[in-house]
Figure 1 (tube, rainbow, N blue to C red):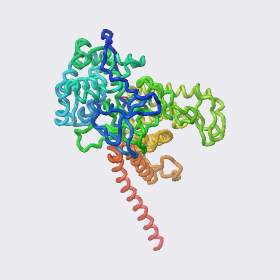
Figure 2 (cartoon, rainbow, N blue to C red; figure 1 turned 180 degrees about the horizontal axis):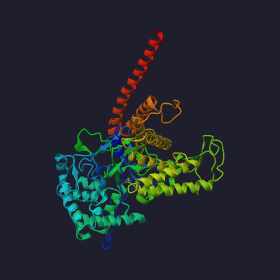
Figure 3 (cartoon, rainbow, N blue to C red; figure 1 turned 90 degrees about the vertical axis):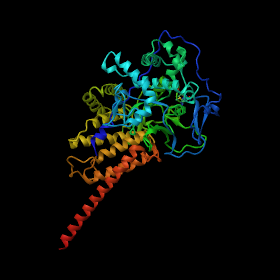
Figure 4 (cartoon, protein in one colour; figure 1 turned 180 degrees about the vertical axis):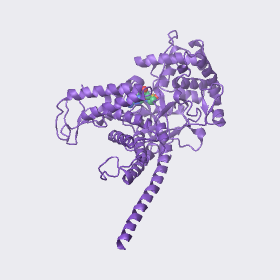
Length: 581
Ligand SMILES: C[S@@+](CC[C@H](N)C(=O)[O-])C[C@H]1O[C@@H](n2cnc3c(N)ncnc32)[C@H](O)[C@@H]1O
């Protein structure tokens, strides 16, 4: 297995920075869609003709409206786990700036070499002339905007606008090209806006984004936005708010964020912290022109008349952080089962029993009052100390995230030091911030893997990958793509050729095992990973690009194991023969 493929999975997170408003832009009438609450009963949903705006709604789902969450998508028939519910090319997408020279801007295919650069703007890259031609109707506008932006940029670092600005630019150009009355534009205009209830941080970001957008479009004043159907400050606020509320990360087949994407139909799914469906980009199309293909996949069986819910945020976070993120960007308080039931022990906020009975206690916090093991009743004697460690862990996590791209070694040192402290404090691997620190530590270790890796370093990376999977296993359902990718990573690491296999350790005790036992563990882990990938990235997609890649690895490991088994069989036979002589 190549280390390069592992390393390439570790790219830093796409940054999401949004808007700000020009002060001199007047507030006015707006084209905001009417509020869509049709029912006062919080528990009922109403079938709605709102769906008529949308093209391509599959037969087995429909738009309904509820008092709590507005429009949403509901199953009409049973949808089985691993089924692709929706598959479409997003209305618009833009690559993160750091991915522009490693991914095609037309089909979003990753390529380490061989992309062709636009000779005019020297910023956008394509697989080939076909991809360039497919993107030309928008790129001809984007190309000159990029050149003007670069000319007036104060520094090289700022010579390309971020993905949010570029995506918004593409949306506005395409609306103008398609016509404001076209179905394409109507779907964009029907996206939900929260312009009357923007949170303070969103206002600040939005103002900044609006200024950048005006500059990017080459307009001398916000008033010139009328050519894009934006006639007032309110209209511009709507454009930005719709974008912020309805944008999804564009991700690689192994879930690395590589940009932003907007699909009005997919944006109709409401949120749950325990979702029944996920949004992924498995790269399963036969025709590259259809890529990037955005798919919504059922994680479990969804019953007829059940609302299909996806998650907008990282569901490994504890309740308070999830609620804060949802409030800030999406302006609602989540009432899903996970958020609603405060009394249930949540592995995201749990520590091991202080008497080591194997049970768990709620992690001490300002809100929780009882720190008792749910199995044996033992009480945490020093909750204050655990709370201190949790706080220190949270601060270390924030620091390590902020420096991971600029000072890899320092970030690695930080995670290396803090993880054992949190483990000693009794945190379970699924508990925040330990799980996040383990995940970050794993990605930092993966990014420093090289062909001349030492056995100890490889083994340490395998152990941390196993801990990461254990933490995710306690939180996410079977087949969740995040869990599936973590298991695939663990299996691939186990399958890496050992630089110096340790043969003396008794089998079954050491982890990771060595020699043939390790090969067997790799095989079993990858078979399991493939099962999970087939759910999270779709059965019909064969688990997406990653699922297909794991299938090939499984097949080659099968052969390798066969050779081992045959070798052992031959050796035993030789021994038997010689003893009989
Ligand atoms: C991406 S849109 C989803 C579609 C939206 N309901 C509509 O009518 O267009 C996100 C917005 O839907 C609403 N929403 C989504 N999930 C919700 C939930 N679980 N509870 C309350 N509101 C929710 C929030 O207003 C949120 O900002």
